[in-house]
Image (cartoon, rainbow, N blue to C red; front, top):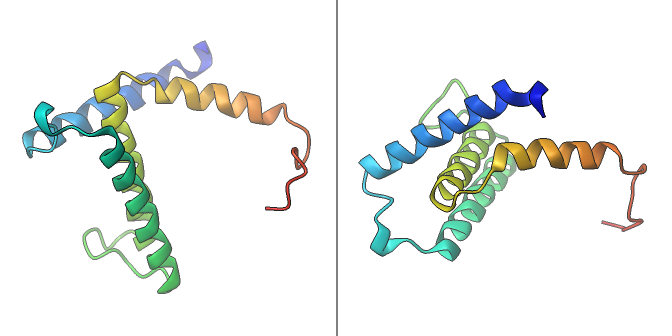
Length: 114
């Protein structure tokens, strides 16, 4: 994975930054941490992306230089980074490994309809 070292290091730095921002704003209190709730919040961001799509993907209300879907996808990644930082998950490394695995799979593998 040496060819991905820069990506992994940058991703981890951003993950730490996101977690620090979350802590500074009171969202990473140990006594209030609930893994299931964090996953539900990630799902909620995806639902908000779907709503943005359903409404024609207008500019974000908070960062208008980006679309609503772009903002919500960013929220998903940020929330995942925060959980990963808390739990010690290696998302960047897992993503690289999963991409390599997927690249080696056959065309439309699995034969599933959906």
